[in-house]
Length: 207
Image 1 (cartoon, one colour):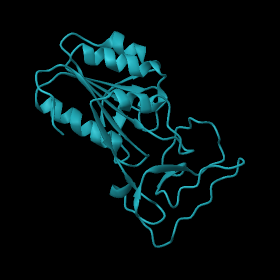
Image 2 (spheres, one colour):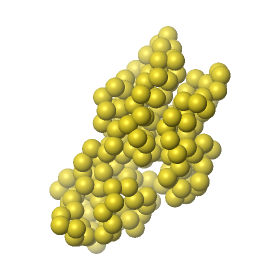
Image 3 (cartoon, one colour):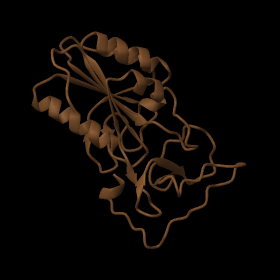
């Protein structure tokens, strides 16, 4: 990735299905910024308390302390003087205000990094992530490993009957699927489990 010089401010989006390493990539970029002695502030949506109420945590258990917020507007109010990088995890859970907040922060010459799902469990664009991706300078598309065949996976398969759009969960509630094996919900039926006995992804593959 060619990084813009002159510190004008910009937006980076890290997107993809669950288990594709989005949070892990976000943590990697944060740590590199910290090595460069840049001041970083990290935020997450308070809905995501799967592993920790405040820290951002990847499925491979990498973590960094963060601030949990209910509304994205709080992020703008919490930015401290001297901050150079703003990182936001689980961007899909925030309202459409995330687009204006991120653009305002970038206009203040901050580097803004947002990680989140680009598609929901139905395979449809998730929240304001598509609009945020369209206004971002950099978009990184992560792929997971299909839990059926082992091919690259772009979709998140929900394994439960719950039809709410937002259901916070991890292994056991969701799994990554390729286009061929992704089954969007129909008529309220639970998507079938097509997992092959020969497909046994490792912990590293699903992080």
